[in-house]
Length: 263
Ligand SMILES: NC(=O)C1=CN([C@@H]2O[C@H](COP(=O)(O)OP(=O)(O)OC[C@H]3O[C@@H](n4cnc5c(N)ncnc54)[C@H](OP(=O)(O)O)[C@@H]3O)[C@@H](O)[C@H]2O)C=CC1
Ligand SMILES: Nc1nc(=O)c2c([nH]1)NC[C@@H]1CN(c3ccc(C(=O)N[C@@H](CCC(=O)O)C(=O)O)cc3)C=[N+]21
Image (cartoon, rainbow, N blue to C red; front, side):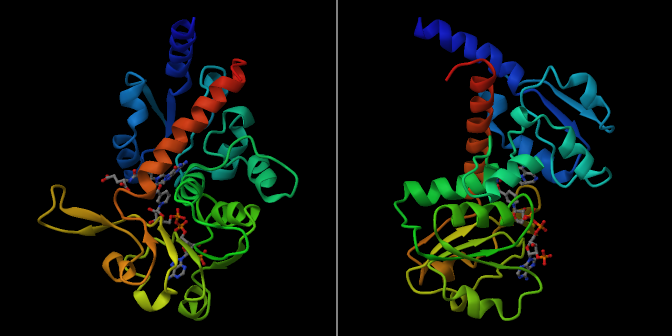
């Protein structure tokens, strides 16, 4: 019986993870190349389209509607509004974001990278309640939802962004630092309080002729420096990135379970 249910789930998940790729951002190819979903679920087909209108004709087929951000040449707001709320596995739909930000409301999906960061903190036994958290970056897909999530877990949250005066002084008071600025080596040891927990979301390609593809990925944090002062630091690569992919799978599974009544 259990095997039968698993088989049915798997068949449905194969449909569920078909992706409509709108545009071809360089980063997305990278994201897809690291998406284990495809390997686990027998390489579901990809459809590359340039017009959001396609959504109308395919929306009943797909149970997973990620729209790679940024959608450089298209109207991102229009696209996000077209994503069905129940299939918004990225959690970027304004209603899901709105529910994430409101007290007493529950979003259907929490954005994958922020959810992965929180999972890292919770599973590592990091106390969040009453702690000072600083989030560096305020983008819709990373900084803002991470700040909202940390606040939901009762941290006292400060958001630092490109216009913040003296960000170092603010960050060095934090028990938890989550950085998503996309600026290599922004966070030096002087930015950190001794014992702080540091989650590095930044993923920046820097030229490196000795690397296989001519570049390597680095985070926002000077890793070696941070290690000498922080109590925990996530590496790049091998930290938040793989957690994002795991959370995408998790949201997709939740979406399919909810749609087919497997609760
Ligand atoms: N590992 C993963 O799963 C993921 C990694 N990423 C990586 O995270 C990073 C951020 O991504 P994303 O949020 O999409 O990027 P955005 O460019 O949309 O946002 C960057 C944010 O950082 C702020 N910022 C930029 N420079 C500074 C600075 N010097 N000091 C303080 N704040 C600064 C910006 O401020 P302002 O708003 O004022 O401009 C902005 O809010 C990138 O490296 C990206 O590749 C992103 C998604 C997932
Ligand atoms: N709608 C939408 N959803 C996203 O989740 C989304 C997006 N748009 N736009 C771009 C960013 C970027 N992003 C990454 C996910 C995984 C890795 C990842 O797994 N990185 C590996 C590195 C892999 C390698 O070496 O190439 C690591 O950090 O270990 C990186 C980046 C998701 N994003």
